Image (cartoon, rainbow, N blue to C red; front, side, top):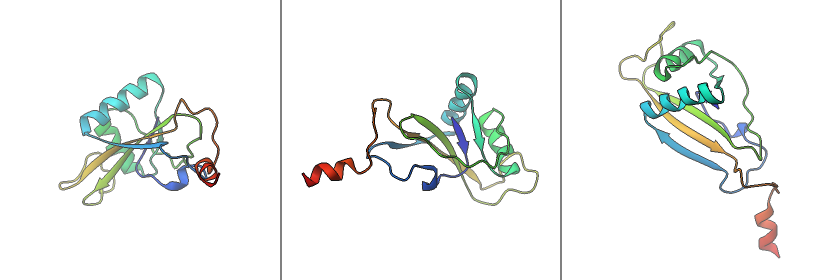
Length: 131
Protein backbone atom coordinates (compact mmCIF):
# COMPACT_ATOMS: atom_id res chain seq x y z
CA UNK A 1 0.00 0.00 0.00
CA UNK A 2 1.22 3.49 -0.81
CA UNK A 3 1.19 6.41 1.62
CA UNK A 4 1.00 9.76 -0.16
CA UNK A 5 0.28 13.37 0.65
CA UNK A 6 -1.58 14.01 -2.61
CA UNK A 7 -3.50 12.24 -5.35
CA UNK A 8 -3.20 13.10 -9.02
CA UNK A 9 -4.89 11.80 -12.14
CA UNK A 10 -1.39 11.22 -13.53
CA UNK A 11 -1.14 8.28 -11.08
CA UNK A 12 -3.72 6.43 -13.15
CA UNK A 13 -3.37 4.74 -16.55
CA UNK A 14 -4.36 6.76 -19.62
CA UNK A 15 -7.91 5.46 -19.25
CA UNK A 16 -9.86 4.07 -16.37
CA UNK A 17 -12.85 1.73 -16.58
CA UNK A 18 -15.96 2.87 -14.78
CA UNK A 19 -16.18 1.90 -11.13
CA UNK A 20 -12.52 1.12 -10.67
CA UNK A 21 -11.66 3.92 -8.25
CA UNK A 22 -13.20 4.10 -4.78
CA UNK A 23 -12.55 6.87 -2.27
CA UNK A 24 -13.25 6.36 1.44
CA UNK A 25 -12.68 8.99 4.11
CA UNK A 26 -10.99 7.56 7.21
CA UNK A 27 -10.69 8.86 10.74
CA UNK A 28 -7.23 9.34 12.25
CA UNK A 29 -7.63 6.09 14.24
CA UNK A 30 -8.76 4.14 11.16
CA UNK A 31 -5.86 5.48 9.07
CA UNK A 32 -3.32 4.56 11.76
CA UNK A 33 -4.77 1.05 12.17
CA UNK A 34 -4.74 0.50 8.42
CA UNK A 35 -1.16 1.74 8.09
CA UNK A 36 0.04 -0.55 10.91
CA UNK A 37 -1.76 -3.55 9.40
CA UNK A 38 -0.40 -2.83 5.93
CA UNK A 39 3.14 -2.33 7.25
CA UNK A 40 2.99 -5.72 8.99
CA UNK A 41 1.25 -7.68 6.23
CA UNK A 42 2.06 -6.34 2.78
CA UNK A 43 4.40 -3.42 3.27
CA UNK A 44 4.00 0.32 3.14
CA UNK A 45 5.62 2.33 0.37
CA UNK A 46 6.01 6.05 0.92
CA UNK A 47 5.52 8.60 -1.82
CA UNK A 48 5.65 11.57 0.56
CA UNK A 49 8.07 14.03 -0.99
CA UNK A 50 8.74 16.37 1.94
CA UNK A 51 10.73 15.37 5.02
CA UNK A 52 8.61 17.33 7.50
CA UNK A 53 5.35 15.93 6.11
CA UNK A 54 6.80 12.40 6.25
CA UNK A 55 7.84 12.95 9.89
CA UNK A 56 4.35 14.17 10.83
CA UNK A 57 2.74 11.23 9.01
CA UNK A 58 5.07 8.85 10.88
CA UNK A 59 3.93 10.34 14.19
CA UNK A 60 0.23 10.30 13.28
CA UNK A 61 0.22 6.79 11.79
CA UNK A 62 2.56 5.17 14.30
CA UNK A 63 4.71 3.63 11.54
CA UNK A 64 7.77 4.83 9.69
CA UNK A 65 6.92 6.92 6.64
CA UNK A 66 10.22 7.97 5.09
CA UNK A 67 10.53 10.90 2.72
CA UNK A 68 10.49 9.50 -0.80
CA UNK A 69 10.07 11.65 -3.89
CA UNK A 70 8.66 8.77 -5.89
CA UNK A 71 6.28 8.93 -8.79
CA UNK A 72 3.38 6.56 -8.25
CA UNK A 73 1.72 4.89 -11.21
CA UNK A 74 -1.11 2.54 -10.31
CA UNK A 75 -1.34 -0.51 -12.54
CA UNK A 76 -4.53 -1.62 -14.31
CA UNK A 77 -5.83 -5.05 -13.44
CA UNK A 78 -4.21 -5.05 -10.01
CA UNK A 79 -6.08 -4.08 -6.87
CA UNK A 80 -3.90 -1.35 -5.38
CA UNK A 81 -4.49 0.86 -2.36
CA UNK A 82 -3.26 4.31 -1.50
CA UNK A 83 -3.61 6.09 1.83
CA UNK A 84 -3.58 9.81 1.16
CA UNK A 85 -3.15 12.37 3.93
CA UNK A 86 -4.33 15.83 2.89
CA UNK A 87 -3.02 18.52 5.24
CA UNK A 88 -5.03 21.66 5.85
CA UNK A 89 -4.27 24.70 7.95
CA UNK A 90 -0.96 26.41 8.70
CA UNK A 91 2.22 25.25 7.01
CA UNK A 92 4.59 22.98 8.87
CA UNK A 93 7.61 24.63 10.43
CA UNK A 94 10.99 23.24 9.46
CA UNK A 95 11.82 20.10 11.46
CA UNK A 96 8.20 19.57 12.60
CA UNK A 97 7.13 16.12 13.77
CA UNK A 98 3.65 17.14 14.93
CA UNK A 99 0.92 19.29 13.45
CA UNK A 100 0.85 22.97 14.37
CA UNK A 101 -2.19 24.37 16.13
CA UNK A 102 -5.10 24.74 13.71
CA UNK A 103 -3.79 22.14 11.26
CA UNK A 104 -5.26 18.75 10.52
CA UNK A 105 -4.80 15.82 8.19
CA UNK A 106 -7.78 14.39 6.38
CA UNK A 107 -7.18 10.76 5.45
CA UNK A 108 -8.61 9.13 2.34
CA UNK A 109 -8.20 5.51 1.28
CA UNK A 110 -8.15 5.15 -2.49
CA UNK A 111 -8.77 1.70 -3.92
CA UNK A 112 -7.91 1.15 -7.56
CA UNK A 113 -8.67 -1.95 -9.58
CA UNK A 114 -11.00 -4.86 -9.25
CA UNK A 115 -9.88 -8.42 -8.60
CA UNK A 116 -12.82 -9.67 -10.68
CA UNK A 117 -11.86 -7.79 -13.85
CA UNK A 118 -9.73 -10.09 -15.99
CA UNK A 119 -9.34 -8.00 -19.14
CA UNK A 120 -9.37 -4.23 -19.48
CA UNK A 121 -10.68 -2.73 -22.70
CA UNK A 122 -10.52 1.06 -22.98
CA UNK A 123 -13.79 2.61 -24.08
CA UNK A 124 -15.55 -0.79 -24.05
CA UNK A 125 -18.79 0.78 -22.76
CA UNK A 126 -18.83 3.33 -25.59
CA UNK A 127 -18.33 0.63 -28.22
CA UNK A 128 -21.22 -1.44 -26.83
CA UNK A 129 -23.51 1.62 -26.82
CA UNK A 130 -22.78 2.27 -30.52
CA UNK A 131 -23.92 -1.26 -31.53
